[in-house]
Length: 524
Image (cartoon, rainbow, N blue to C red; front, side, top):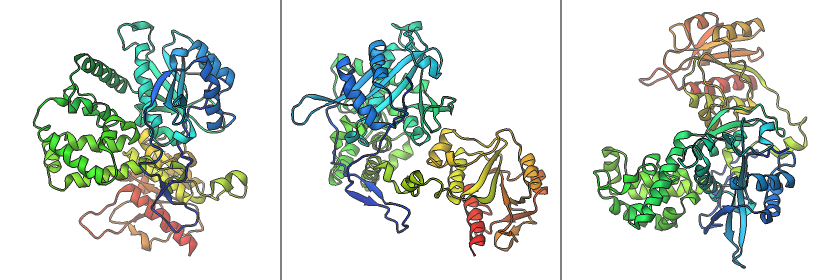
């Protein structure tokens, strides 16, 4: 197959030096974090891949991907020969011989439509740039190489797009790729947006189509133009030197060539930078590295760094000027950097239970679903839906029905909040109304309960909910609650007691309490 795996193995292979969030539960492992001074990647260079580089690229490809997803040597040779302009590698000098060593690459072809057949060949005038592989060699993963490589790649590809006058109509207009659910947040951070689950079948997993956002590409183009202007004028100052560090930071400063200009928000910038640098040095973080190699520190850390130097409002400026703020920001950056360098495969809250056993003994490890259906009636927030799907997967409920305007996977906010749980939860049909869903569940023998703060509601603790029957719980919109017609079809209406001024809780919190109360009833 010409279509390769469009995912990225980010897990580090070396043993980490720090431990965080240690838990007693035997089925979970601790979050391992690597030392910020360990395996640092410097002196990266980018260039087109040559025919002589293909064996090394194939070595990285075949060692990084499953056999049914890795590109063949023939495919890599084809892409280098016919789409060499779109085949870029990242190199690093060997510590012993000083010879350059390829540590990663990105390759693409142009096509007329985003289908497997169209992507199997290169059409030099195709309107779509289809990214096939994003690969980083094992020793250099989880160090920001992938983010830096993608950022550099998109900048270089601008010269072949229709955004550049010299290319015009001959340039591509879209950049597309496929990715698995666990990497959607990575690509979103790199400037892509999730379009839909892909109809393309490649390997055993579900893939999602993503497209580079137009505004992100335009910002990269402005940065490139601004960088060229600075080089021509040879005008170097502190703010201009920091331009590279803002690539992974706040979009407002990244896209603003007037960052160095004097204004009310820039007042005291050098003083704040001096204080922050002092605090960062105490924590073992080199501020100069943050300025010149931001990709090694991650988007979140760089955004925090930039926002402190150039606050976006007078209120934020007042906070930044407080005596202890630099220390607080430095501590925040320290944690964000450690989190960025963590081995994601060992993250406490992102590790699949008994993964190895489930693969080797799939039948023995099939989990029985609890006879519980969660019904969401016109829920507004995608973040709430993602949180609920994560709760539902952890509780092993039968399904979650997303009714009305409730957002559905693969909405990027849902996928990010669910942290990989969404693909394991049955979410029902997209066109079902809440009322019809409830009627269907009742016809199948489910006891349906509305969760709402009405005068006739029974407190959850007192509600007679037999654990022997299949049940469905209906949760409503964050503002107006469950529809009245739906409540009329419920066997009972239950509420959660509150003791403060607010008489309601966040919907995801309610789902967690109700679901685990049902599990508790069954356990006792």
